[in-house]
Each structure stands twice: as structure tokens, then as C-alpha cells.
Length: 437
Image (tube, rainbow, N blue to C red; front, side, top):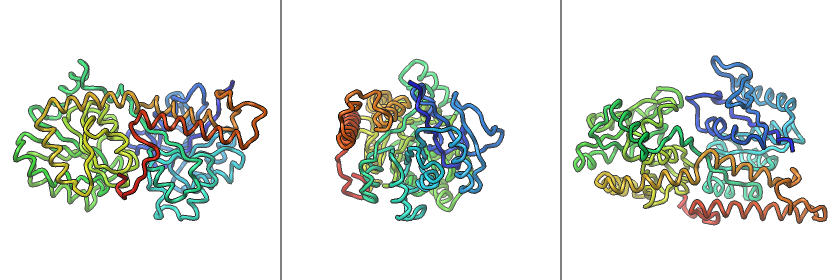
């Protein structure tokens, strides 16, 4: 059977490949090539410096277009997609693109892959346009149960279209510190970064209020009284690929100035340097706010064998097993609980190692790009218009359309329940509070 043609449309914010992009482009770049040979994928994205109009990215064709004017960007991609002739168009994180591409490709299945809650908020799309885009999409993929729950509150009629596919991590790049090679890499990074004989707590991400770095800096005085060898390393800037500052990031710098021996700021680093900072650290802290849909950085930290302390918010509670791979803390008591959990881990090297080993195991079992591709393919293979080639029970010519639709939904539900069982997380758990707990 010939592979299914699938067009992946990126937002046009950053080119692919790029070491300075958001996680949206990274997800596409890492998991799309793994869909072969079942799928013949093609990536559509933004032009970039020294990048040709068309080239191969990990053996996948990538076509690039100018993105200064988004309407022209989407229109040009729509015309290019027509020439490719895919069975599925997957739009990455931009619901409004679904509406435009449906107009230029009326007979093609269109999937929407949402990576965050940002572009379904009133700031970026009206309620009318949101409902229209969801109605026109044949499938809506989200990266967490939290995001699924958020969408159901906004557009409950989209329920049958929603599927969860978790992002992953490249475990060879984010290697475990619990191997001989990993131990050597950790020593190298600690020596190179001047971290020998220090207990290192790391935050890595954008310096925006949502990420909650101010909470971590506020408790530094209490921590260093008990652990004078502590160093808190803040890696990141307010914007991707830039060292530009904001009022908030300058406030953080001011908070850290009083404790220069214990707080180090490292401006935005390319993605290739991220594993090294996690390898050099002892604990990772991600005190993000309630809108954090997934938090890929948590998985990356866990892959290197770090225990992670994060807020009990958004999709992070689907990643971190409280008391097993790290700790989940409540946002209402964030400073008190963060202080207590950090002191516990800073004092207990054996506990750090125990949690770090389990973190790495959890990533290997659930959060690799291979897992992401496998889950995506399961959804694709269950689509009613693909003749159920991998599901013989759905190909019975005697089944009426209503029965077929019901079987498709039942099988999808079974598979998602299995994923939830593996995650230790139940699909039907309601998000009764704003913090997602």
C-alpha cells in the first residue's frame, strides 16, 4: 500500500531547521521524519537566512515561503499543497490557518495540532472564528489532557474530534547521567561551566511572568542560609533566539543582584546547549503558571536524570509523578512548598538520584519522539476515510456508516485509555480548579 501523503504547515514564526525556534517547530522537525514509511510527509514553513526555497530536513522535503505577511504566507502554502496532493493537511498551532486552507483545499482532510492555549485565546482569535476553525477541522490533536479540557470548556461540540498526542525528547541528545558516558559528560559540563563543588538548581525557559521565575528567586535567601554552596542558574531570555530584555526580566536581574555568588543568569542559549545545562545541574525547577499546556522542558530535564519540582498546573501534572520523579507543588503555597521540597532534595543526594533514575525511566517508557510518532500513526490509521487497512473489523462492507463511526470512536477511546493508564493519569479526571488540579 502506498504511503499516505501528509502536509505539515508550521506557523511561519521560525524556519526549520533552527536552533533558536519555539517548541512548535522543534516538535515538527523531530517527530515528522519518524512517520515514514507509512506516511510521505512534507513540511511547509518560513524562509530563513542561508536556507534554500526547498531542501531536505532529515530526508523530509521542506518548502519555505516568505512569512512577513501571514495572509500571503498561508495563500502560497495553500497553492503549493494543491500540487503535492496530500490526503491530510496538519496545521500547527494556528486555528485561523484551518479556515484559509479549507477554502483552498476543500476536499482534503485538515487536522489542527494545538501546542498551547495561546492561539485559542480571545487575544488571537474571536469565539466565532474559533468555533468555525474547529468545525472545519476533521481532527484536533492536543499535547495534554489539560489542553483537551480547556478546549472542551470553550467548544464542547469539538469533543469527538479531540485526541491527545504527547511530545517527546531525543534521548540520545539528552543522555542519562547514570551511565559511564553520562557521568563523564556531567563532569565535563560542570568543570567547563565552573560548577564544581556547587549544588546547582536550574531553571530553563523564557523569562516571562507565566514561567514564575520570581518565585524561585524570592526564596534564595532562605535556601543559602542552610546550603551556602547553592547556585541557582537561570537560563533563558524573554524572547526566542534573542537577548532582548523586558521590564520583567530586568526585575529578575535586580532580584538576583543581591546574591551574585548564588544566582547566575545565562541569556538565551541555542537548543544544542540545553542538554549540557541539565547535565550540570542537580535539580530542575519549573514554577510555571496555570496556562502551561505541557512543558516540554520538564521532559528534557527528566531525560538527563534530574528530579523536577514544578507547579501542580496545566499539563505538567501529567508528566511529573509527585513523590516519584520529583514534586508537584500548589500554586497557592508556591514559595512555602518550593522551599520545603528544594531543601529536602538539596539535603538528600540519595533521594535526588532515586528520583532522577525514575525520571529517566519514565521518559524512555513514554516521552520519546518515537512514542509521539506511534500515537500519531494510531490516530491516522483509524480514520474512517483510509479504508481501515490496519483495522479489519472496520472494513466489513455490511457495516452502515453510523456503526463504522461508532467503532472508530470506541477504538480511539480504548487507545487513549491505554495511554492514560501508562501515564498514571485518567482521561476523565475533571479540571475543577483554575490551576488544573
